[in-house]
Structures are given as C-alpha cells and as structure tokens.
Image (cartoon, rainbow over all chains, first blue to last red; front, top):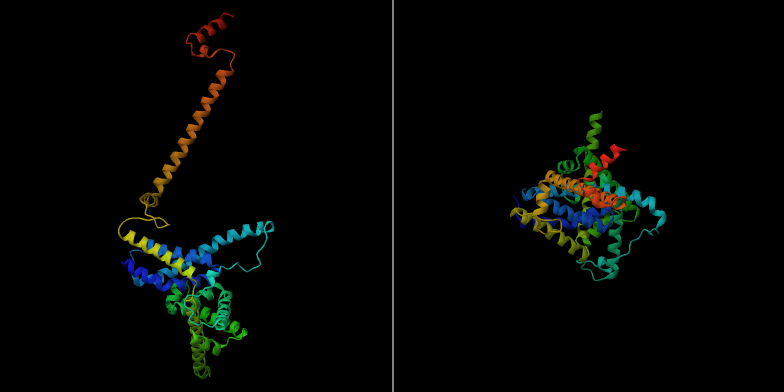
Length: 196
Length: 140
C-alpha cells in the first residue's frame, strides 16, 4: 500500500502533464481542471490499497475514463445547446482571457519578443495536437509524452501493439506535416527544444 | 527476390522508424517544457486538487471516510455501502407521506360533508338517531 506522501509525490509529478493532456482532448481549461481533480480523487479513494508502482497506469486509465464520461455528458449538453442556440447570442470562438491565466511561472526569458515567439510556436504545436484524431492523440501522448512502452500503451488503450504503432506513426506523420506547413520543420523543432 | 527486397528495405524502414521516434520525442520534449509553464491560477487549482486527494487517501488509510469536497462524513460512507437500505428508507418515507396525505384528504372530505349537510353535526354523533330514522322510514 502506498503512503500518502508517495501519492502526493506521484500526483505532483504528473499533474501538469495530465492537465495539458486533458486540455488537448477536451479543449476547455476549466473542464480539464475538473477532470484532472476528479481523476486524482478517484485514484486516492478507489485505489488507496494499491502500491505506488501501479499508480501511473491506474491514473492514466482513470483520466481516460473520466474524459470519456465528460464527452458523454457533453454530447447530451450539445444536443440541448444546438436546439436552444437560436435563443442566445453565439460566441466568436475566442474565450475571454483572464490576465492571470497568461502569466508564465517559469519562463526565464525576459525578452517579450522571444516569449511571444515561443508562445506562438507552442500554440501552433498544441493546435496541431488538438486536431489529431482522438485515438492517435491518445497513443501519441501515452507513448511519447508519458513515456510508456508499446505494450503498456496497448494495454491502456485496449488495443493491439500493432494498432498502437500504427496510431503513433500516423500521429507523428500528421503532426510533422501540420508543423511543416507552419514553417516548423524538424530543424526548427530541435532548435526550439534546445532553447527551452 | 522478395528476401532481397526486404533486406534492402530493412535499414530504410528502421531509419524511418528512428526518424519518427526522434520527431515524436522532440515534440514531446517541447510539450513537456510548455507544461511546466502553466499559469499561477492553474497550478494553484491543481495543488488544491492534489491536497484534497492526499487528504482523502490519508483518511481512508486511517479508516474514516470523506466527502467529495474533502470533509469527513460517516453518513455518506454508510449510505454508499448500504445502497439497498437507503433505497428502502427513501421508499418507506414516500409511502408514509402518501398515506398521510390521503388521511388528511379523507379528514377534509368528512369535515366538508358535516358542514354542508342539512342535519346538525350532533345528529351524526347521537347513537339513537340512525335507529329512530330507520323506524320512521319503516313506518312510512
């Protein structure tokens, strides 16, 4: 059984990636926060007796399931929103931003131009990831971002290892093509990676 | 022939796979770096969620139960564990409420009948009134 300190350390380690991963999937910061917080609580409540070594897999599974629950609820909500949309004024597609949300905590660069350029590049990458089909994005995130091996990713996604490889390959090709179109080739990426 | 082809294709295939891995790792590295630059507000909310989860974990280990908002509750834990009993209690409360409503309506109807009748209310209380009424009816 994992101690509370082990759980705390694990969550501290994964929470930022989990949040961003959820944002890419649901495209809503507030919903993503709710989902991650819910997943954290579910892990603590339902798997308190599990050893800490099992936490990465369990947490990812809970997170994916919580995202699916969100999509199910969203479908029903969207149906009503579509039906009632004629009564309300529509959004322009851009949300209002709170200045607090745009303050970066650990951006060491003091040059606003560099910060802006980096932020715009990351926006392009994030948009490209958001555009990926759900299964491809899931495979890419689990395999490369969460650093799971092919077998673990397959177990997590409930598919064969061959499917994981296919999803990953397609995801990377799609991402590369999208980024290339925006002028972000492999060289630009590695240059950006060296700067960060 | 095909064996030769596969021999020639293998290094190219491997290099392609390596290239894919490299690109994917570059993107993942950038995402990782970017994920470390979340806003103060988001970090604070994530921290709150983590603390709530850790608190829940600690209380579960110590044998107590907690609510979604992090407060401890033995009633909600009992309800969670005894769903059938809870359903029974709720059903019994509904039936009791229905019977009470029916009884009240019956009482109301009786009062309305007494007040709207031509006879005075004392006539209905008098035990001899109904036999004498029957006698009078028989004599007619």
